[in-house]
Length: 80
Image (cartoon, rainbow, N blue to C red; front, top):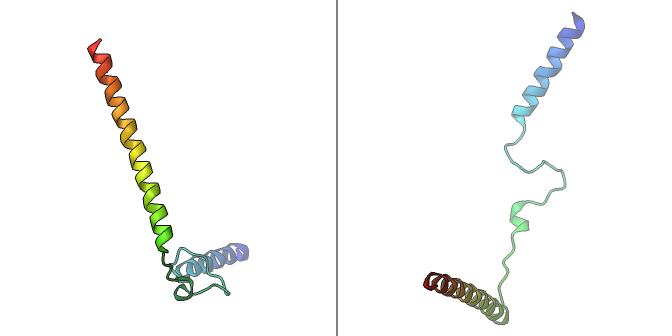
């Protein structure tokens, strides 16, 4: 009887502790950095922007060429 009461007390305290914890998805750590310190502004240099633009345009061109080739193949197959 005494063990059963003790088990209920432990379960109740664990359930209460689970409700009292913060609703954050991140684990609570004592030495954690606050969110305002973690956010920094980073600007892209004109050279980086140009390189990214060229890379995106190259990717777009490859996709367009692939689509055209596939379309062309399908039309050739239908003509036969």
